[in-house]
Amino acid sequence: MGYLEEYRHWCEDSYFDEAAKAELLSIKDDAKEIEERFYKNLEFGTGGLRGIIGAGTNRMNIYTVSKATQGFANYIKSQGDEAVKKGVVIAYDSRNYSPEFAEITARVLAGNGIKAYLSDELRPVPMLSFAVRNLGCTGGVVITASHNPPEYNGYKVYWEDGAQVPFPRDGEIIKEVNAITDFSMIKKADLTEAVNSGMIQYVGPELDVAYLDAVTNQIVNQKIIDETDLKIVYTPIHGSGNKPVRRALAKAGFKNVYIVPQQEKPDGNFTTVGYPNPENKAVFDLAMELAKKVDADIIVGTDPDADRVGAVVKKTDGEYMVLTGNMTGALLCEYILSQKKAAGTLPANGAVVSTIVSTDMTKAICAEYGMKYFDVLTGFKYIGEKIKEFETDGSYEYMFGFEESYGCLAGTYARDKDGCLATMLICELAAYYKSKGMSLYDGLLALYDKYGVYKETITSITLKGIDGAAQIKKVMDTLRAESPSEVAGVKVIESRDYSIDKIVNNVTGEETKSGLPSSNVLYYVLEDGTWFCVRPSGTEPKIKVYFGSSDKTAEAADGKLKAASDGILAIVDNILK
Image 1 (cartoon, rainbow, N blue to C red):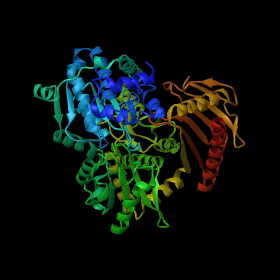
Image 2: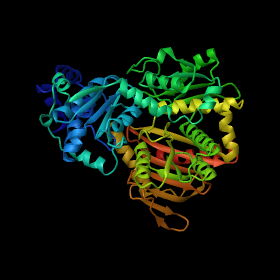
Image 3: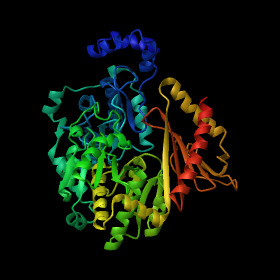
Image 4: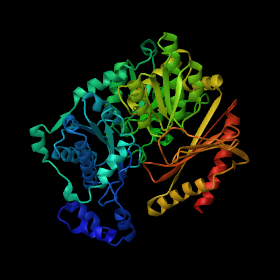
């Protein structure tokens, strides 16, 4: 069926509700919009669904969500009676239609004989990850589009270990979802009947209590919190972090916590910021106003699903600076390892896990404390896999993991990044430096003095729609076919293509393997130690280019970074012309 036929089918078939039909009829004269909505099915990728909310096969709506859930249910049933019996837990954040998508997910699971544990209010991603294991479920689903713009929502799938579904299980679930070729194949239970029969069970405060205990058990040095009077400004940026973060900070012992009132309540339109990304300094404008009034030591903010956190600190010149995910990750890594070493609790087989696009400073920190460092692909599920591996074979004790995109996890109570935990630990970190008469910015400078200056940056090129997808493919295909031998006059000494797991030493010609799963990622190392990495975003219509460098001074590191950035972006720009 072509996209026009599919459009007419949605407009006319009694299966679709009147609101969806009215929305589609309103675009009857917009051929491009009709094509965008129906030229394909919204793809169920390795993490689930993510897309623009609206009617159509290429949009997030109750129909595409129910189709994904039917496929997931079929996969669970294929795993045997025990998998069905254990059930699935469902959570959702503050985005538009998140409660509706969560409810239809529960109804489809129940319609397939799979018990659904449905959150009774919005709760963050890390709590869902925790709940899967806490409730002994086969899997989990969380309705969220993380920090995407307001028009997006998504559907993330987790397995019994609390991590996002790993390879090769993810591919098997995708096959089941793609096998649902007609909406008539979807089984849905009546909500009231399913609740009365126990096939849908609401979960609430008891989960909050268990999760809060797990989070506060990760406090590194309680004495520092108790003896330091820290002033904190916190913003949930209209998301799901408001309650769990405030509870965690209170239980940890932080007494001076100020909430940004305009951003406290859930709001799927993210009215005060538009784009609710804590990487963006603009989302902290209101928080910085409040921080000046109360003379705050630190500002922290979580994204809508509270798995990421941004921290804002005051520099020596009085200006506010948003710390990058690499900065907070390195600071926390140093703090956790150094404090445990001082307390005599640092294990000999400790391990830290981070991603290939995160700062190389972590490797230097691990070397300092005798910890094993592991590289994984982008995506926290790969860090979750490592935690499971360590627990299964007893080879290492997981100490800390983070990725540059503002997500980290200490402890093994969850298998996804936790912005609630990170907020608490960053505040403990700030208290530690305050106890020494230093700001968190001073702490960062001390880290540079100890290990050298590491700088990183990322450029995202947005390429929307059908044409954009073709352009993204063109960039990746061209770079593979014409791998750059130098960038800005500096030789490329190593090239990695993770899609075929090949690492080439361009100096010796030697080829090796990374041992990591296949992924559409290209990575290059320059002669001066600078590196850059190119990959399509898995959640947005973007191609992302990451850069990293280090040197003895900030000026030297920044210079190398800018030269590499200008050089490779010029190459990408020429490909797109």
